[in-house]
Image 1 (cartoon, rainbow over the protein chains, first blue to last red):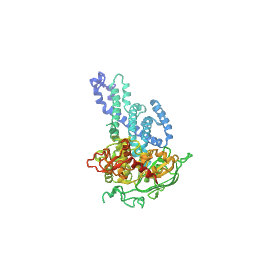
Image 2 (image 1 turned 90 degrees about the vertical axis):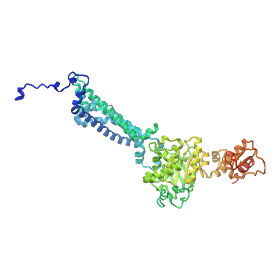
Image 3 (image 1 turned 45 degrees about the vertical axis):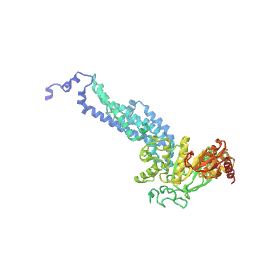
Image 4 (image 1 turned 180 degrees about the vertical axis):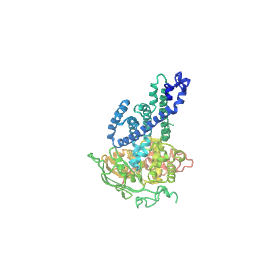
Length: 240
Length: 360
């Protein structure tokens, strides 16, 4: 009964906080340093995970749909309509809608995030494949390539710039949308942002988490640009 | 056995038959096969008239056959039937004595060089990779392919070290065209199909590429089917010319000289043009005709070289007021210091020439 004897426990925030936090300055590096391991890094890691999984699955589905539409032209319009509808559903509504059938978990978040990548990726892949010049395709067939060889050796490589352009938009979109994944308990950088809003005038957590989302988007975009440069040396040759 | 490894071993290909010309040209271009179109027809589904009607032509191994005709005459269609880019409706096509209809279309196309007007180089591949397309499809090893690419770049007059790693966008129109030809020649095909290969090139470069191609063909001696709408190009490039009229009907199949001298009908006569006599003169050089003897007559100083075509010489003769020209065996501009007088060219010589050749 020692605890009772000492009276109610009042947490002393100030004891472990810096002067900056106590005085509630605009931005406190001390707080970031202190909470990196417990708050920010886990949120960032989750955010990256959410993004990678959503873009990877979205890309796989879109590629399959685009290849089908490339072979069977009539598939293109209905696919654009369906993915277009998915794209226009307000994200908040979609997350909420999915909670009932799927539950409060990462799967819900991923389903929603994937559905936003489909239109962008599908349209870019189809456009990229279609813009392969006819004479290039004719030469490939005339030299005895099978359809699969034309696709793998000629059409897909030439569609790469359009495909990577789609991946860049999809990735940045998903990074931004994933900030509301916390609503379905999927974590991500939205969680510290949300918590910060409940912390009254204290801004550091909000700025740090929001800033990380922005930096993550810029880094991801930069990486994709780098990958494209490596994969498409002929595009640079054309500019030289 | 220099460079013999580059040609498929004998017996490997069904095209190595008695119809195949082997010994001529560099050993790396050992193959050429006879091509025969036998009553070939093409009718598109839903079309009232056939696009090609019972077309029969035979191209001997190593010769250039030009398909020429107005638009709608089916010349490109006829060419694309050969490598089965379009499926035939009737008749048969034999390459080296064997029906192409019994071959797998992909395998067949790997044995037939294919050059189209827009060339269709792969923009994402280097010159070397482009040329290596068919060898790669055939599963050649790296060393053999690299040797072959080097040899072909040499053959088309591009420096291998400098050009190998360039992308098509870094080439001029003429260079792209040459690379397209090298790519078609890569696996030593016994037959080449060329669809208006110089059509997108400006006139000056076109003439140069035509001359270059004729020199190349003199070395590689391929059987070639060459499509053009330009009768002058047909006369220049063809060992034989097949003139097609609307509806894919063969109007005449003969040597250029025969077509210009004895057009089969009014259509052919109109198609080759009212200047067909002049075109015929373009087929011979002064070295090939009988010239008037100088007989001590003093030429007035205007000279022309033996290597000039009779047509160009006639033009000079006319602009010289019809006065006889002195023909020398010197260089083309007639300034060769040691040039010897070979004879005189007079208007009478030329008109006798036309007269004589009009007789069958």
